[in-house]
Image 1 (tube, rainbow, N blue to C red):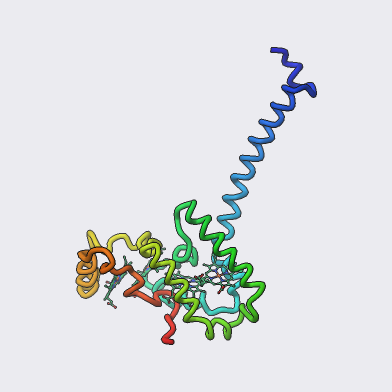
Image 2: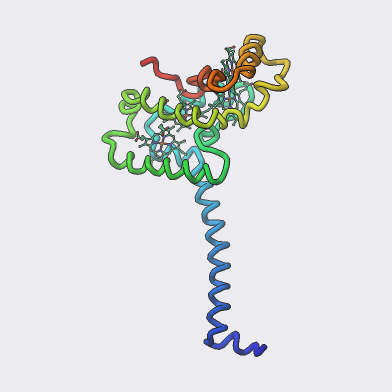
Amino acid sequence: MNWRALFKPSAKYSIIVLILVGVVAGVVGYFATQQTLHATSQDAFCMTCHSHHSLKDEVLASAHGGGRAGVTVQCQDCHLPHGPVDYLIKKIIVSKDLYGFLTIKDFNTQKWLDENRREQADTALAYFKATDSANCQHCHTRIYENQPDTMKRMAKMMHSRNAKQEGAKRKTCIDCHKGVAHPYPKK
Ligand code: HEC
Ligand code: HEC
Ligand code: HEC
Ligand code: HEC
């Protein structure tokens, strides 16, 4: 092989450059995507549009805000899926929020949230139902099997009974546990 040919603007040269450019672009693109997805998954990102909503304060005041266990559960821990493909799909749905943000009048006000809470809550709940509350189960891994001794008797009983139910009779976490992070609206 004539090495000089690699550095000359020949057919071979352009192929090597193309491959190099492709590899570099691929690597850069990969990390850029990771970074973007990471950045868009922080509470701060969610709060850019929900900044005038009481959502974050509600989480902090709940058991998920760090009380006994010192853990503050992040928005995405509950609201975004863990698998990369599902994650991207949900991101695209979250991007629909961008359209809503631009078009819904007075969206980022507490008044809007108060008035639309029930509808928003039910939309959020539909996601948990569709995924069998996978986000909850990701952290709460010992609800149905190998329950800890410290779990309240009432809780153990309800959970064991539910675990024995088949098909549609079996409830998902949020069927029994609404309002674990934000108060579920009464009407
Ligand atoms: C670009 C602005 C914007 C960003 C960023 C944003 N949201 Fe929203 N969000 C909205 C709007 C607008 C709605 C109402 C959408 C509608 O009703 O059409 C909404 C509704 C919701 C809902 C209730 C309805 C549903 O789809 O379940 C949840 C839950 C939610 N957002 C969570 C989040 C989380 C978690 C994040 C951070 C990962 C986030 N949002 C980031 C604008 C945004
Ligand atoms: C990132 C991990 C994580 C996720 C995700 C999570 N939890 Fe929790 N949950 C915790 C921690 C930590 C506590 C506090 C435990 C303690 O105080 O000992 C807790 C407490 C609870 C409690 C008892 C306190 C209360 O509010 O009654 C319930 C019920 C509960 N979680 C249900 C849920 C449900 C339902 C979901 C999904 C919507 C969920 N959790 C998602 C970590 C998580
Ligand atoms: C059939 C209804 C039902 C289902 C389904 C259910 N729970 Fe519970 N859960 C209860 C009841 C009732 C309690 C006791 C409530 C109390 O003590 O305030 C409880 C208590 C808890 C507690 C607190 C335990 C303690 O000792 O303090 C956690 C955490 C919890 N559930 C998480 C979950 C998660 C996560 C799921 C889904 C995997 C789930 N539950 C499914 C009814 C249910
Ligand atoms: C422990 C899990 C959990 C965490 C953490 C959490 N949410 Fe939620 N969120 C829920 C559940 C469950 C619902 C469905 C309504 C309900 O049960 O109250 C919901 C509902 C919502 C809604 C619809 C309106 C409403 O109040 O019901 C919005 C908007 C929302 N969440 C945004 C956020 C944002 C922003 C954060 C971070 C500051 C966050 N959530 C953190 C579980 C969580």
